[in-house]
Figure 1: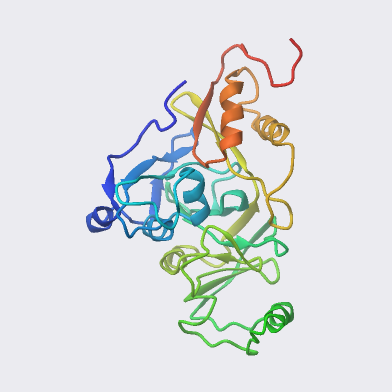
Figure 2: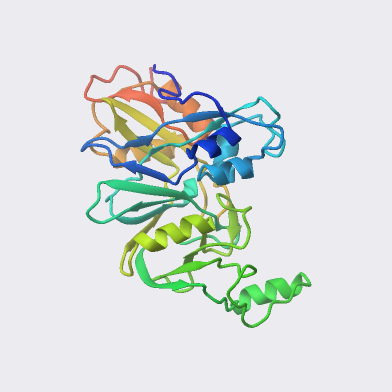
Length: 320
C-alpha cells in the first residue's frame, strides 16, 4: 500500500510560508477525466506563537480539519518546531462539477467557475447542533455587499435569554456578523456570508448559514454570479481515482441536527462505495486500510484499492 502522504512539500515555518506568498487561496486545475483528486498534503514547522486558528487562516483550512489531520497536537500551543500537517489534498465531491458544492461533513465549499478548468475550495462554518444546515439543491438568488443584518425572532430570543439582547437591525460594518458580503440562497433563511469573527470557520458554529473567511467570501463574490447553482450535500466518505488507484477520504458523519452521527460507519462507507458504480465492481480492496481510514476520520485521501482487478479480499463481516 502506498504512503499515506504520496506528495508532501518540504517543511516550512508559518512565517516563511506567509512571506513566500504560498498561503494563497486554494485554487486547483481540475484533474483529467476519470480522476478525482486535487492538491497535495503539505507540512510546516510551527513557531512558538502559532495556533491552529492562525495556521488555518493562512492556508484556507478550517479549525476541525486541522485538528483531525494532527491528532495529539495541542491546537492552541503546538510548540516551536512541531511539524504540522496541512490537509490540502482533496477528493472532489461526487456529482456534477458545476457551480457551488457544499459538503457539510467536511466543512468545505467547492466552486467550479463556468467555462474554466479549475476549482476553488474554501473552509466553512456550518450550523451548530440544533441549527443544522440544510441538504438541498438550490441556487444563488441575490448578492449583497456590506449587508445589514435583521436578526430573526428565534435568534433574538436566544440572545435575550442569554442576557445579550440584539437590536432589530445590525448595520453594515466590522461588528456585523454577516461580514462584508452575503449570498442569498433559494432556501429561505439561508445565506453564504462573511463573518465578524475569525474563529469558527471550519466548525459547527452558525445558526444554519455558511460562514466564510472575509477574504474568501469577497473572492467568491467576484466570481460567482446570481443564478449560480448550489448543491448542498453531507458525504463523510468520498471515493476517488488518481493515477490508476482508488482512494478514500473519511470525515466524521453528521446528523440532521448538525451533531456527530451514530450511524454504522462501516455500512455507510460501503453504501457510499456502491453509489460509485464506476468503482464498485472488480476492486482489489484492502479492507484493513479501509477500517483504519474510517476510524481515523482525518479528512485526507488514502489509497485503498486498485480498480479493474479481481477481488481478492473480503468485505468485512463476510463469512469465511
